[in-house]
Length: 322
Image 1 (cartoon, rainbow, N blue to C red):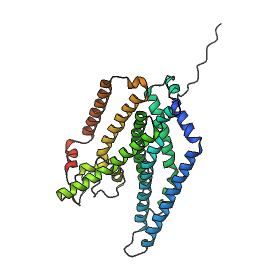
Image 2: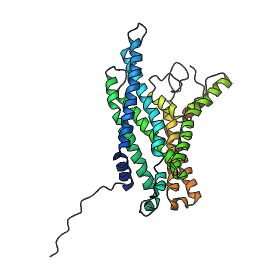
Image 3: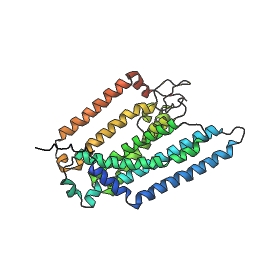
Image 4: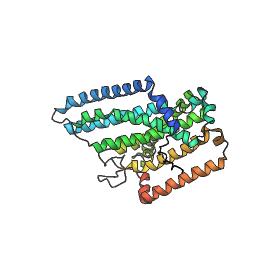
């Protein structure tokens, strides 16, 4: 009589690249030093900002405790934005190039992993460290919360927006790392691209306002990650970041429009990174890559038109009044 076989226990397969990258990052002392430095920097500037606000809080025309709480919340959020802006390219620049520099690239080729699995594993490992960094700053928000002025939903919204921007910065840096195969070069090019992408829209907006002697087009603010994050955090909808054209705020916030552009950028750079990371992906027909990029652009465009009608998108060519 044959014995019935017991069913094998189900296991959840975890990307081996993800496990390797997380263990490599968290087992070293560098990750904890950077985390401690991040918290110390945030706490130091938060304390300075609070003392500056507190000195004018008791005056007749000074801010209320709720206004101080909101100002501190925005200050912490933007300090985290700057840390992500300057920290992510530095941390993600060696994600692919380190395989070449440490002579482990040939070992990676012997695995059955696809280019997509490798890129996703390294990307998720990078984002896992960003999540830990964001979660470690929550005690600072809890200290500011006693002053009032903001809700925990605002903290959640700020951290989700920060994680989205970290994904954007990470995939751009990873693409540079796979293309240049050198950490220093990838880091320099990433800082140039990300920094320019953040700052240059404001340069164009300034020249546009000066040349036309009017408010700059809302179009320029659609491209900058800083505008995206500022619009996400804006307390009042009656501002240029929210696209107000008068005393009433009836237009769609800028971040709800620029998110489609950033999603398309993430998808395009992900496709390019998967093409560059492995030799077989590099040798793939370029027509296939162009077709995939075109499909992504078309899909995002259709989604943007379905979510927001053309009348909403026409507002980006308006000049808001202050």
